[in-house]
Length: 141
Image 1 (cartoon, rainbow, N blue to C red):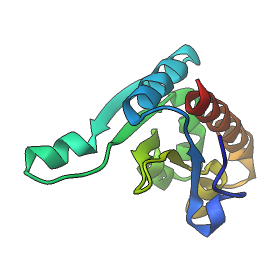
Image 2: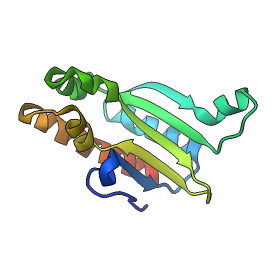
Image 3: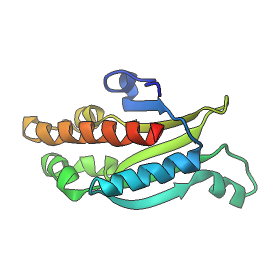
Image 4: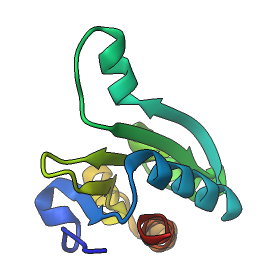
């Protein structure tokens, strides 16, 4: 696994890590891991299947939408606009070289984007730790 990001995602808030397994397997793993961690999977979107449905091609690309109101609500209590970035999302995709990547929004980028104050900092830090843990595990499991 390699982390193709630093800090808050190099200014765009996006963190991408290299995965050891194909897109579907990685997304399956991530869904299992987040559920085992007490989060809910709200949706899974297969973008490649959507492309095929309209006669177009797209490398394997799946979006997993997940979270827990206990983690996200404090952010929205601080600034309700944070709800545009919640629940959390992870995109598992195959790049042009055939490498599978897992990308997600950095929690500190979400905090900065919405101007979250110090009273939600603990929740932001918990989300950051949780995202790092579940994505790293999914990337290598």
